[in-house]
Length: 62
Image 1 (tube, rainbow, N blue to C red):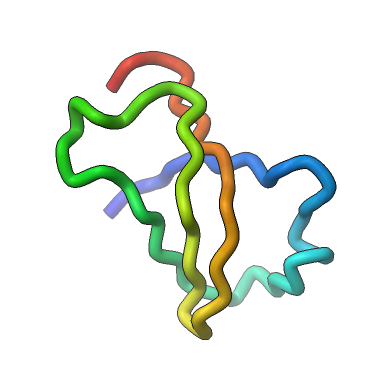
Image 2: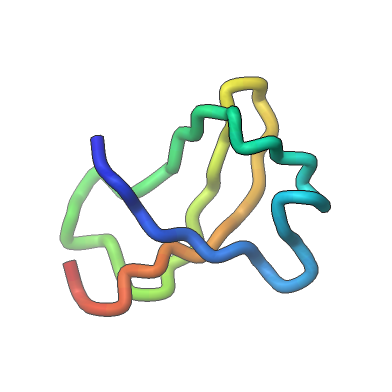
């Protein structure tokens, strides 16, 4: 468990995605740490099943 900085896609924000801040999130990252890249798009799924794409803000190689 940890913190991953995410950036919404252009035109999206918590309001447009109807996020309240009370959700729990699953972030679909590659299983192999060597496949994680700076600026990579990831799929985020909330505990109620809503999915959206964000950019993971890993600004340097992991």
